[in-house]
Length: 482
Ligand code: SAH
Ligand code: SF4
Ligand code: F3S
Image (cartoon, rainbow, N blue to C red; front, side, top):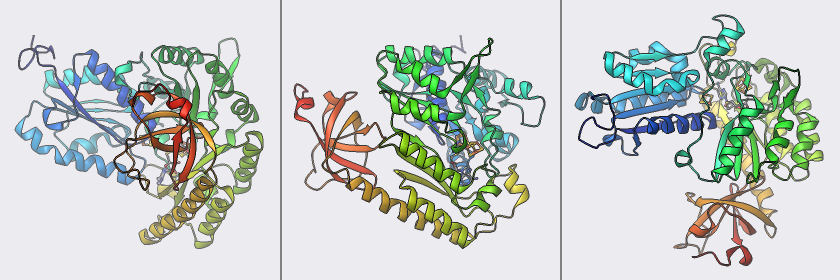
């Protein structure tokens, strides 16, 4: 049977799929699920694009840079398609949803275009494109295309049973708790490409976490664009909040650490902070983007809070959860951001002492409110300077706070060999391993395979702005083969 991937081509040869993923953790999770599904259909994963029968790009539209990456990748593979026209090319994810026809115009060699709300249909549409010899599109409805129910239904949840072999790490996993976003920050494309906010039923989340724990997962990261807005109303009117979910997940044997990203400042309720404080499994780490420290800019961004609200929230977090590590995102050079506005952001960063901040230059996104309402009036070189300046300030703070940890001991979940280029003097030639503390700090230490997936105590001996360097306690090293 020609369509059988296992028997097509050379006898016994399985079809090979290659995938590149850009964007956020939600996309990493989607890619894991798509590949797992294709494996069930007889494909195997390859990291060599020249060996692939199917080439997939799971894309991001959050900034122009992310889209450019995908377009240049699609340009680079034109020659592959010319030489081997039977190779199937797919564009999945947020850019597929946003650009639809434009992708086909710019890259006519694409066979399937599948939005994030239709990701479960990848195998079916690859087959169909091949059978019909025509590109296949599967997209969800635009946010203005009908009632909330119809639009929500067009963004289908895809959270099948998890396969251990497909996870980037055997003991860590992402679990989706929410899809979409309803905040509509004026600069942001996410609500259009990921659809309406929808919380998954708690029973489904708990069942997935149980399955993961049975497969050896120790650390679970809950995903949602505004994860602390999670709210699920049962038929009988009972409501489950993120804090309730944390309590339920805490009870699962084997689950030792739980993180959740990304939080929205206005939804940082006390029940959640108390759950993080009280639950031994809850990671004392919260990513809660401020975006700007200037009220005027925040208003134009439609973030729905002021900088003083944000700072009060931070104070509440630090008071409730001793030792909490907080990280943030900032956009510099947003429409109308004056030097004074920027200075207010600098002030916020200086006062807040975030563990780290992700800083982005504003990138106009077609279809957003900001793009329709405000001119993109901060010159590129000013955006660049503000980005560098803010990053330098944050880096100095991260370094200072990390150096204060020298001499302390913390528990680290060992993830694997360190890919970091940060090398400590005198360590050349040793096997560097890395892991994270409960506060999400990266720690590099001398280690070996036997430590992978274990919680070990590490004494911190040195620090850079992004990495702590330490030594695994003798007790935890004992009995582990080198
Ligand atoms: N849902 C998360 C993150 C969304 S996207 C949240 O609300 O915090 C991740 C980050 O990208 C955002 O926090 C923001 O800092 C940045 N971002 C989003 N749209 C952008 C744009 N048009 N230009 C530059 N950065 C942007
Ligand atoms: Fe975008 Fe704002 Fe939603 Fe985050 S909360 S995804 S920044 S619209
Ligand atoms: Fe990008 Fe989509 Fe995530 S636009 S940031 S991949 S939700």
